[in-house]
Image (cartoon, rainbow, N blue to C red; front, side, top):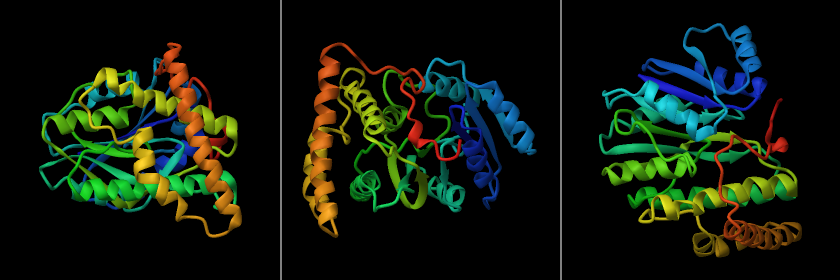
Amino acid sequence: MINIIITSYNEPKATKRAVEIFLKQKTKEKFKIVIVDPFPEVESFIKKEIKDKRVSFFLDPGEGKSYALNMLLEMLYSENKENILIFTDGDVYVSDNTLSEITESFKDKEVGCVTAKPVSIDARDTKYGYWFYVLFKGIDNVRKKFSDEKKFFECSGYLFAIRNGIIKEFPIDTSEDSIIPYLFWKKGYKIKYLPSVEVYVKNPDNWKDYLNQKIRNIKSHENLDKIAPDMPRTKSLWNEIKYGALFALLQPRNLKEIIWTIELYFARLYIYLKAFKELRKKKEYSDGWRETEIKSTKPMD
């Protein structure tokens, strides 16, 4: 049995697309979809637009994404470790092979978590589109390397899956795509990367949204030092320099992209410094659901 949890935030049209793509997929496994959203009007829209008994709605109580996911973990917990939980978002959509490839990967009893390949839908000929092309390609390379070497790495919150029956909850003071894989890793399970499974993402297209999104992400990862001090860090300033500095220099195809690459270096450094400064001022990561709304990442609504 597969339970697909789609978390959204007042994105009814995009969430509808995300749900419909899953419903069309071919798999021998039974599956259900739970939409998690704090807006009752989204529930009304989905129930009107999608007439399928496999789809249900869970009203997010508004205490944060991790809080809502913990409630779902408890509700959907099963002692059957053959069952699978898939986590994704309403503002992204997945490739047609997602369910079949994820199901196949969990036939390996040692696999506890699997994650997919984020693909930016933004045009490369814009600065922010190019930035995310470089960043996502770098992430792809690192995850392939760590997965092949059977090392620990963090998953992608856009799309990852876990084996049911292993955990019932996780700490809410950091991002779920970081701490959940670590909890599995501690229990002896492998993390697996599926580059053939793609999740399509609309990214920020302006500095304000980019800054808000990335600072919040960095602060959530820095919080891991308190929650799981022995956790191997794969998302950090040092690792960006170690695995990304030279790699990024090899990506430009013209003078414009060379300039954008240099700007990306300074942007990433500024974001880390600003995040560290806010943390020193006790402006810690908060799990409030999209406390700073990123409007430019809404693909349809």
